[in-house]
Image 1 (cartoon, rainbow, N blue to C red):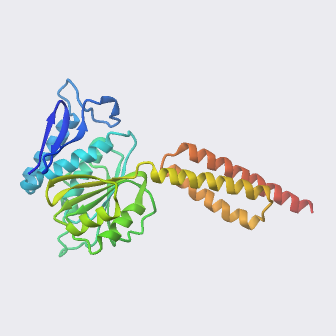
Image 2 (cartoon, rainbow, N blue to C red):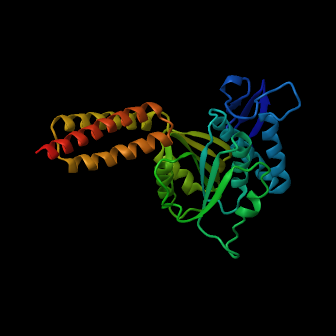
Length: 309
């Protein structure tokens, strides 16, 4: 069995293999952008106190033997929530039992009150064992939250809109690989995908197959958390795409293309501006707006030429 403890103000996991993993360093005060202080000399709420409180609540309300795994999950999610002061947009895939939803809502509401949690479930109704609303209603400081009933591998949500996507591995997914593909589609560039594992070997193997670069934290041989951080790879790809798009537009404007082609180009630009706004990428937003202005100027000139003729 693994153990989680604090040493020199650092949350540490000593996993089932005897390896020590640093989970959250509470000495790095400047890394914390959230509304809860990491450490303070007063009796006010701090991050360690908040996390320990959640741990004890879990032991009291639900299965005591799972409290350690949820404690691990809370600490790992917190390590991402403290990095930014802006609200987070979080998606949970598989929210029926509501326990993981409770933890996510508690953390989001505690750290960033304007954050949003969307929990996706497959079934709802009196005979579905869906306890989501009962459990999330216990959250003291709730963020904005919603429940979406849809297919796990085809949510119909927009691409790349969530900072964090959590796959709840207490649910037995019919096709976990397709669920992972859906999570990859939904997470923002630079975002993170969590998999909460509870005796789901097919989901575990699918995650390892899909993401060769990942972090693993095992609490028992079959229960743990796996994380896929997007890092800079997708960000760089998107940056290259925008640069190429800007170059393509400038080349097309110089070659005097017809207005019909320009209109289809404008749709591309508007879509990329929307993505840049969602991802808080100010530099790309400015570049794209400047290109859009060039295109609009080109359209005006073309129309004036037609009127003169």
